Image (cartoon, rainbow, N blue to C red; front, side, top):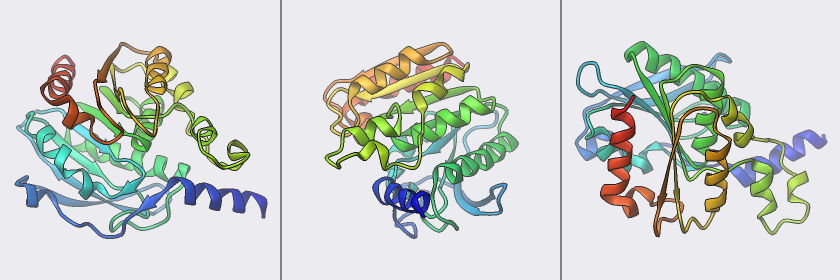
Length: 249
């Protein structure tokens, strides 16, 4: 019973999904196909394929712990405008996907998304924001990718729990998401982005990910950037860094 209770507490603390999709890429002018991916445990998840020019790099994107991929269309539009293909992957329990989220479940969904991206593109860069950064780091530590971008991402879930006001919170989380350890196994070129004024995940966690990374790693600190607006606050410097990173692969 105790493990079940711990998972329930962790799920309530960590996952904040919205059901359905409030918008689609077509609403921001991006042609797309809706895909359904099947993880190795049979759970079906939603994805949006936004093709770029022939032969372009595919950026496989994983969003944060709240809402859905529809809430990230403001970021996906300028990303797609860089001349890349984009595969936005939804998690189980989010949007129109089946199932319920968990650490292992999200890892299964990520592997299914990477398999689909590899089927469509010769080169795949994995991008993750916040919780999605932890998902992306695990994926890149376990399977070959051509590049990794992590943004506003934490070191471990235990360290995030320790920042909360909940007594004994570090003993109440059932998942680990040990990104600071997993990123040591990532040999692909990596770009770490963090807002200097991130109110949820401190800048120091992003810096520690850079220090621990096993492959060639670049760092972009966004002055004034908070947890959810690095791409807006960073402006041309942000998009220049992303475009330069992708162009150098």
